[in-house]
Image (tube, rainbow, N blue to C red; front, side, top):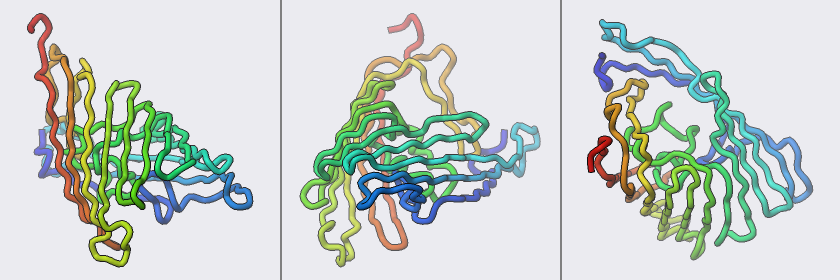
Length: 269
């Protein structure tokens, strides 16, 4: 098997709306809107192609190929001024995958309720949209962070935007998640440090019995548990975060800590 970090060459082509943001598409096209924008319907799209080639695969373990990594039409909008909706489908690989599907109340910036399928509020890179990534695939620390779940979230901005909070209860993973981000100089955009963000995120919940496997950017598996291994106990994940937003450069520092019980083989305690 070729070395997963040394032999892969990847080419990515990104087709996204101008000004694509982390959670939606700020460059989406408005196809219908009422006076004042209390009701509106917007369309967007994210298309990414990837080329994967192994340069020293003498055993032929890897198939060199081009593929459509993400093909995502996006439907979003607002109803009656206070309710937003967001639908994000993915047709890559010939399958239809519902990536996001939720409604979001907007009665107050300090307290909002979101219900549906969306990103669990933990991993910093995960919370940034695929259109904002430097590479087609996310970094390996993100593989231990949760992705999406059917959930109920509460979120908001306090103290003039200096404190952002998000909490959620998931349906599939049964995880409780929370994230706090402090923006000390958010009210002073002229200051050089106005883009400083410091945060802490965590999740806790039962360890699923089905254990994950891990793949490289080239989608080659480099670690998996034995067939008779199963997860037991409670899983807790903690992610301290610090990042600085500059224009047009973004610098990110992320760390992640995962605590989980060891896999238990059937018949052992």
